[in-house]
Image 1 (cartoon, rainbow, N blue to C red):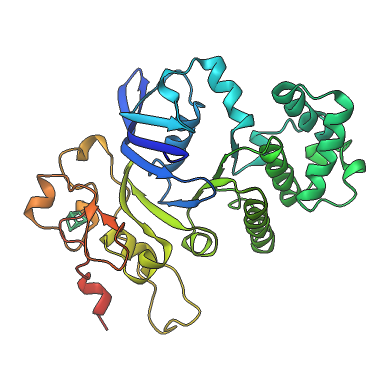
Image 2: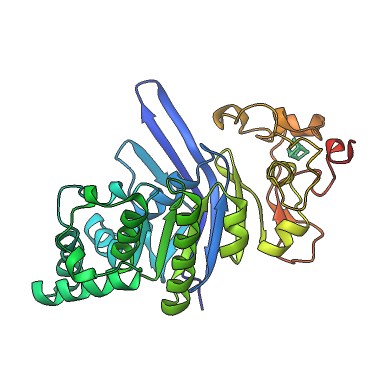
Length: 333
Ligand code: SF4
């Protein structure tokens, strides 16, 4: 049986008066039903743009190409726009970092939630309102009937994100793209939102593509993880393998930059030197070369492929000529 989502060779190119900029280049993964995949990387690495491209939510100035892009056995590349629109909301949904991106701040949330059911499932107004209240109750909003008449601008950020999640899950989609859903929230609410996603996934078996900056969130929520850099996947593995045996210097740098509760407080945290690469300038070399302490001549003249390396996880892959070699800074006193 084929995977729920199959993406291979995805590229996204933006056209402007100054020319073309490729933001995603050769991105791909497969996601099984009910699986949670973490996608991590710094700002500008292409994680959100890739997923907006998969969902068909990019503006017309973006050109999305792929050698394969299928969802539940359907080829998304050949679907008409109205067919893709029907899929979105009903079978594929997204939760944004800022829930205001999905909600009208001035319309009562009951109206906005009901509309999803009326459009996608031809629900009657009465039934849609009843189901909207049930969805709010499911995401932990108290007194949901009364809340239907409240507008998003009257709610806290955490409450709005719960409404965003309720809206995304209203039609029981097979796939949920959660695009940094906790970034704008404080730590306590972040933990509540992660618990909520975990519970809802267990209950409904939704597959989740979880986009985040936070390796801690990946560890707590995901089955597998992709690390993105400059529009490409540089490492992919099961969560345990990635944390216990990171192979790519960028992944190792990310992990070393995170404070640990059991870490040595006398040692400063390591930072990854330099700034993110421009993909356009690095298409014939390793995009990480200018920031990598392990770089050697071949890194500047060829781009490493994403391939298997020695790891307890047979599906562990990294795009690095020196995968698994420790950075000398890791053992420095
Ligand atoms: S291919 Fe070379 S430059 Fe790129 S990450 Fe590996 S060692 Fe560093």
